[in-house]
Length: 124
Image 1: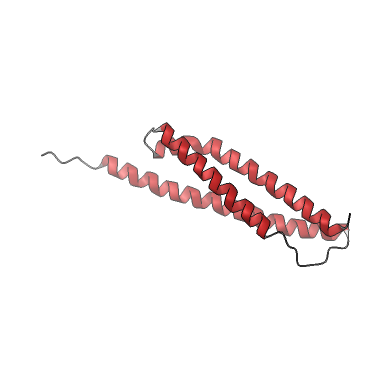
Image 2: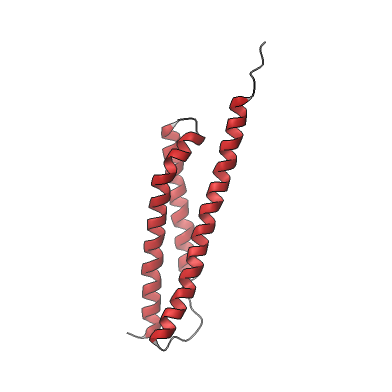
């Protein structure tokens, strides 16, 4: 097996495995946050959580696939590790950015719903 195929194989295995692990972790640990955002409506929170996981997989796996091509020659084991670390670094940054974007959106959603709940209801 040549080094470029080895690099691609390792990149796909690590990227897909990392994407699955992050999606599961965010889904399990983010559920309580979503339940709170949706005022204890657990079916709605679970549904949104599932949709977020599907979207997360689609975006990240699409990015991983699109970002596969190296564009450089890989002729030694050292170059395999260097190319792989560069690729994985970008994947990690994208996963982290997506996580913080989701947190930002749901924090704003939660803040908005808390403000609505705390406003006095006008008495007719």
